[in-house]
Image (cartoon, rainbow, N blue to C red):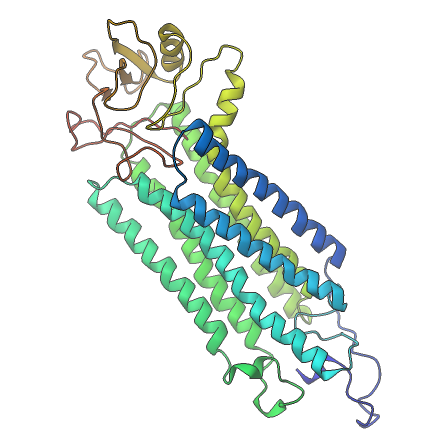
Length: 413
């Protein structure tokens, strides 16, 4: 790490001179900061929209997943603040490496302080990544019904792995080099300085743990969906939502490849690492928020007829019974009974409302007896712990009152 800046004037002339010029390249510092600001702004808007939909449309309290996502955004903003600091001291440049090789600073105190800031800057990044995971797992915890023992056990295993991976990433950063101050006292205490390979080791270990967790979380919903019988259009929509997870993993793999290729060619640029770190954090937050915006899109589409319904325990129904029945038939539900009191609308379990069959006539989930996939208004089996406030809801399940033989669900992806 002694190459971080040129030596003091008294050092022999054979090593004095301008800082070494490495064959590295990356985006400009201004581009990195602009990306930070844009993505943070987009993710903040989506998170606020998610919360407004939760409170104003669903009429429900905020969930743990919402709070975790807000904390993830705060951690991402904290990560971006480190790049603002780098810009002010002049190291957020394409030709300067993550270890500050190529920086023309000569003051040892300034160099070591910058290295210290860099070491601490890893922690908010880890928190942002794993808070996003925790938010999604909180949704899964509501989504997976307790009577599906195997699926719940798999979920608990993934939650345990993610917790261990987070702790392992933090501990690797802390204990990769002892004493800890050896991460930054490379000039004043060179005898305890960490090896130059330490940051790369932390990066590879943390990324491996992170991507394995992402793959496990991506596969989790499929263990539940395979037990459902859905219309083709609904199934395509469900898979489309789940495929968003591939986008997040694509960014993660690209970040790893770009940084590794840059390091193999000489050294990884600080701006390159900062840019891809920002992309991965904020894209994850955006992807987690997107499925929750479907009610907003559905409301805009149907606003001209005032026919809108959102399936929460405190939801409101708009429009006449005939309007809603027509909508439900389009979505694959067939009305098999309707209250005689004239009250229309589809209400939460246990409230007055018509009875529906999942899959109208002509769909795969319909049969002549009308019993296949029956969803009764008195059915209180909602996937999740005692409510339908999760971002993804599915109702009625095998082994529950009156529906033991038909694992059908109502989805609001």
